[in-house]
Image (tube, rainbow, N blue to C red; front, side, top):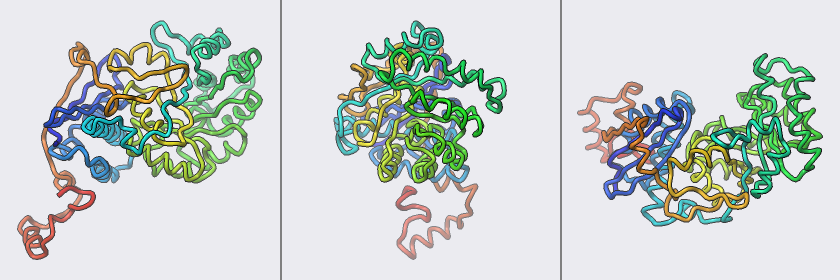
Length: 419
């Protein structure tokens, strides 16, 4: 089996969403996904990484990951390149699972559980308006979730009051107003439902310190990105000011950035986004690294439907997964327009996928959408050729002389670069 073609699909309805499909000569198709600046991810897939994968064995997932990462990390391991790697990695795991007729989590080492509890990030889409309703009827929103078996929720109460000053100024009256919904929930329901606080990195450190101290009696499940994760020492100071766990961070890329937060006291809960930070391969490594330090992971969602299924395989296979993010408004609102079969939420739990591979595929109707933008590529290139502008190699005849005299392969090939 070899990789024969790579395809990306974007839709104008959700301009940040991109699906990636890897085709093989045996007819097996792997599905991946990423979110944000989709057109730049599209370019990275087709112009940067696709040529490296073409004609290769899709089973060599770790080798492909290292080759793609090594080609791009000289410019910093983040941005569109890593989102492209993430989507391609998920698609490769999907191919392997389908070919072996096993769910991905079984290949990762087998299940440590067969369901994982979810919390609902309050969203707004179509008829589901939890994100708006929490300001007018917070207790009603919490009760609806509890009735569905969902015992945790996440809201962003301070986002609005950060807008005027870009998080640089915080008035006490504004903070009291922002925390009113959570106070009502605690007054009426006590601790029946967990409530996490997401700050979206909008605050400076002094204001974040005020917020965590004011919220301490309300016992939030965690504080997520009250400040940007650019400085782990600032997070250490924030965590030391509260008994509430600090969760970080969907914006951190790969095990290398997560390592600093895992090994220090900058965060007690690790929150990688699988479709941004390096795919299934990398989140498994992040989970293992976190487990060494007795820390849980809580995978980030709120991107697209494929991420939920990919995260489900991590959640089933890694014992230190704490809980899974779930966006009820997006799931019931539009996820089902794109994939089948759907992932299963039952009584507040994400259930283990049962189908081979990822456990889903794109609906055929996606390609027929009037707003679909489809690009395919099938060209092949070697990493050493793609990087020739960065490196100076001997002339071809000198390389041939080296190979003949030493019996070695072309310089640059080996464990990471291809033959």
